[in-house]
Image 1 (cartoon, rainbow, N blue to C red):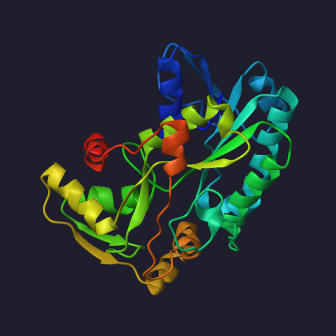
Image 2: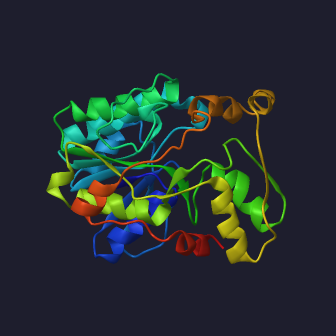
Amino acid sequence: MIVGRGAAASKTALLLAEDGERVRMISRTGGGPDHPLIDKVAADATDTDRLTELTEGADTLFTTAAPPYHRWPEQFPILSASLLSAVRRTEAAYVMLGNLYAYGPVSGPITPDFPLAATGPKGRSRARAWEEAAASGVKVTEVRAAQFYGAGAVSVFSLMVQRQVMEGRLALVPQELDVPHSYSGIGDTARTLVAASRNEQAYGRAWHVPTSTLSVRELAGRLADLAGAPKPRMEEMAERDLTLLAFTEPFWAEMHEVLTKPGHPFVIDYSETEKILGVSATPVNDVLREVI
């Protein structure tokens, strides 16, 4: 069973269904990909009794869900507690999709055993979700992804760079343009979730999705070349820009916490995922061709 309906959830569901497994997808809207083996159900995952009822009989519960970005500190604990209660009651294995916020502003390459030292509210929300699940006694693992890119991704790159570059427009980016950064493809994220669910060695610890590491300017340049678009025009957004935008939309206020240290690459080590789970990063150009 999968809680969520975004790109990573949908790709995971399709991978499982294509292997002949029956999948139930849970989301508030009941959305998801069409496939004879995928059953889509509209439900609120914070309704623990309903979630437990839907989880009964499932071998594994995957969660890719998250509250609205600016509501994480208030709503993530409620969602996480409901999910954990459901797997406790049903004894399903539990596979969590996480991200890198829980580490806080550290220097890489980051390995999955780095301490979860975030002090900001979003990072601590992520850290607590894993810490509580890991201490609960359930069969659990977490797959941590870097910034998403690829078909269906929702990220700084997809929202603020991708379309602008393909249309030849100026891209304003809340990220240093020439500092290396790790990016996780949607397909690689789904493949890591599936591989972790099927490997007994995966449980009890976290794993990193295989990534490609390059600057946002380099990634934008690759996209432009493949799409036949003009050379990207890009500018870095200043802290003042984010502060002013925060008056118009809560999302922008949240960006301050997750900006990396100036001049510091944000790079992860995923060698154990390759060695033990058998998942490698898809070449960048192949991921970008899917976007185009």
